[in-house]
Amino acid sequence: MRRKLLAILLCLAILCLGACTATVTESSEPESAVPSDVSAESTESELSEESDVSAESEAESAPESEEERPEPTTAAPTDLPTDPPTEAPTAAPTAAPTTRATTAAPADSRSVTEKGYEVVTRDGFTYVDGVLVANKTYSLPADYYPGDLTAECDAAYMRMKAAAAAQGLSLYISSGFRSYDTQDVIYNRYVANDGKANADRYSARPGHSEHQTGLAIDLNGVLDSFGSTAEGKWVAAHAHEYGFILRYPKGKEAQTGYMYEPWHIRYIGTANSVEVATAIYESGLCLEEYYGINSAYQN
Ligand SMILES: [Zn+2]
Image (cartoon, rainbow, N blue to C red; front, side, top):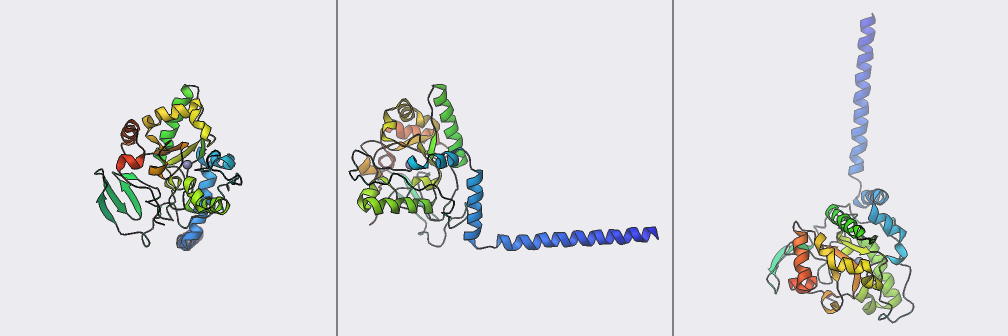
């Protein structure tokens, strides 16, 4: 009698377990099949909540942290926006972090720059000698959303920051990763306030910002004066030792397409980042000149 009771209980337990498992399986399936924008939204909010140094500092210093701010001296208009939008969680990406556009992307291709470097276009991304390029000529897929600085970029930055600290210098990130949608808001706001021609000198159109790559960092106060501080001078002289280059050097607007930005550094992002960054640094050229590529919008 007792054995029978035990057997019944066991059966019930197995049935219950089966039912629970079935419930879990059922409920997880529809979730993963949810339309991409919904899952992307949740992914982004998770990411921004969990994000580290860069995202935190980005939020903290948002008012002064936007890329390609106008130079007060040369950007004449006085009604420039001084309060760029914060990295609002409502600016939902159109796809999950690792999703890459495949439908709208231009056909894959290979060519060679005027300096002999190979240009590979794949899934809407352009690599020159293996280096991902985002400028006015070469764009990124709208749904490319790494969500933060890449792990390699972040690690390299931390090494550089520690080396600077050992010299008594303080570096911090004002802006790191920025989504396509956030850039869309920022750029169009500059256009509305300052006109397209002016905005194009200091703000990237959505899909053309290096910040969307997760390989670009705006340092400290995002100020022109950064270049003449001890920190700015140290970064200019040593960033390449950690795989970074000053992306928009002084006097290179015609080549890079952007005004001088002493605060904006770019991690090369290849297996030999330090080697490449050092070669570019020693050449005295900006990225576009070094590889022999252009940075100009089609329209
Ligand atoms: Zn920047």
